[in-house]
Image 1 (tube, rainbow, N blue to C red):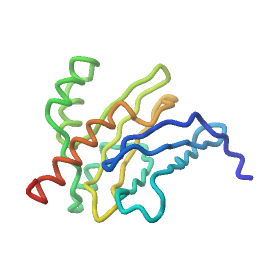
Image 2 (image 1 turned 30 degrees about the horizontal axis):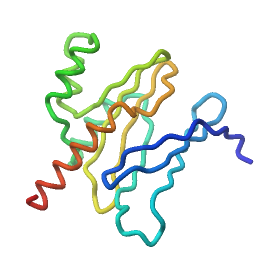
Image 3 (image 1 turned 180 degrees about the vertical axis):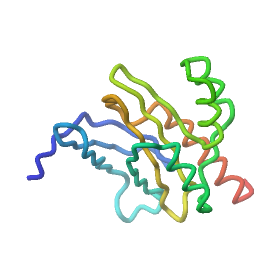
Amino acid sequence: MLGLHGQESVDVADPYGLMRSRAVTNPDGTVRIALTVGAGPLDDTVHAQHIALATDDVVASARRFRAAGGAPLPVPANYYDDLAARFEFADGELETYRDLGILYDRDAHGVFRHCYTRTVGRVFFELVQRDDGYRGYGAANAPVRLAAQHAVRAALTGG
């Protein structure tokens, strides 16, 4: 009805377990909606809801978010050490990502940069920049996000 085409279904890690996700997109990929199925509606184990917002400049968006008092999800420093070992970056680029908590991925089609807010209640937001036809959703960074969310939750609850 909307002219969207289904992509492959995948299991996505969530702070409270695995969820099944299937994206639908328009032909040129400018509209992407991830449809996710988790536990039943009466199951209290499902908490976090994820809203992703596209931007043409994730660095500028992350800076505006932080300047407005937003709380970005802190990314472990060793993540950026790993990125430096895997990819080459322009001078200062990786340091900017580290400072702003921006995650990075690359596939055969393009580059993906994204960052997350801390979870508030049951919701967290993601700012995404997809360049040069990148087709994925940054799934390689899901374990980093989960570990960071767990660390924040543990610090807040003392456990």
